[in-house]
Amino acid sequence: MVALGAVCGRFQIFHREHLEYVLAAKERCQHLIVGITSPDSSVAPTEKEDLNRSQARSNPCSYYERMRMIESALLEAGIDRADFDIVPFPIGAPHLLHFYVPRTACIFLTILDDWGHRKAQRLQEFGYQTEVLWEKTDKGVSSSMLRQYITDGQDWSPYVPAATYRYITQQGIDRRIREGRSPMDE
Image (tube, rainbow, N blue to C red; front, side):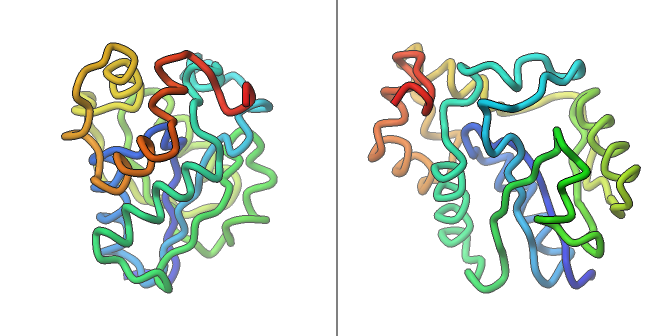
């Protein structure tokens, strides 16, 4: 077990597989930093390995909204609030990462596609120790799938922690997604 670990993701809807990833990392460290990539989606660079990540329709939640979703889901899962932090994780500007995540942190990753491999390589190039928790090609759940379910009026609640569902519906984020708006439109 390491003292300080970190995970990262856009979490542009924090779903059950995200929670599984975060909880698996937490089992391997005393304190966990949850890094939210593309904290300001208006300046998110386009990544050739994942061309959709910078599009407005792929980023319906603000940094603050994602932070609240993640925090609520982790608390609901029984993680003590003193055992984790949530910070911006500017993977598109990796030279800035050390302002948010100490280089002493082990960054836990899941590899699902070419972007996952590129992310691991980028983090290693900037001096971070990385550990791949698992690598698979089939995403059982994806945020883009959930956004499409919301748009189509399908039931998406089974795929997200209850805290995520409550937050999205109480804040009207589901309506924003159905209307094709982003936080910048408000």
